[in-house]
Image 1 (spheres, rainbow, N blue to C red):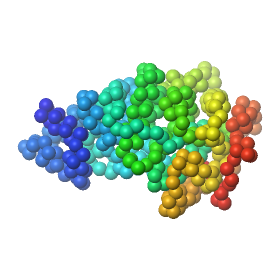
Image 2: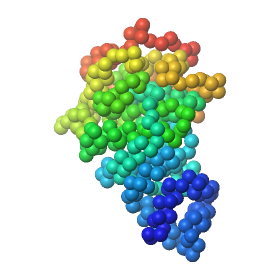
Image 3: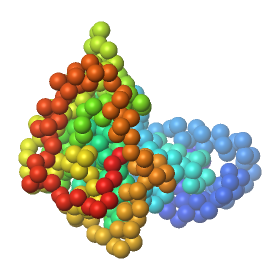
Length: 389
């Protein structure tokens, strides 16, 4: 195993060896390539596969992790074990969510399916400084179901942007209760640097998860000058959307209880009561954000083509004719199902709750929402094609 371990570590560090292995179209092809690289001509398929599986489960030394910087993409963070899993990237992401992009990376090459290296989260300290520091072009915060997926998807169509839309590895590091705020700051910054380094020439846009608004002080402390867009929506429509398919933060997921008290289930509370409380907490957190020229608030009803182009300009992203066309085509599709034409469902959402439930929602949340809706003089002019999510 020792000899294969050294060969495995060399493979992870070597762009030339990885490029050679990426040509494999099947497991058999990849095993043949590894036999050549590892001098293991006599090893059976079974023996090689067992050895690779064991090596994938080992925590790599810090020096190997450091040499992977700029080559491998941090893919997933396991909170319980505090270990990171890595994969090779497959071009910039255009999928609605980053976890869908990671599935594409896994499917794109046999190498990613067979070689899945693991490091400790502490190994990020060894990676720090091995790649250039990244200054994100912009952050997107939202209440969920507010059009943020449409906005981030449109921006991903621009040639000089790379969008990390609700990156699992970033949010899981932020919600790990065992990490100190200092560690979270260091790890998040390093992860952003590592991810950005894989897409040279592109500016990074990060769409955070809805619950990441509670990490505002930490993230703003790291990146005080990054332009920020905050998206909101009529609370009734948000809750109606979660009534159909509940997001993680609306499902009572206990792993979020350490993020903010609103995610702790109250004894005797109904599902709707709990979700109203969560949305109330998100609205209050957004309402507490300081006003500045670097922060723009957009209501779902105002998310039109011109608004999206305004955000792109705010983030310093350039428009090519091809990029503008791709973006406008993206606007005509369902944001979560590209290629499927968008069908408005506002009328259906309006009928989800009873009159009494609607009254409770309005009493609890309407005033908070209205304080976040941009005033007329703050709004960007509408584009000729309005598109809602």
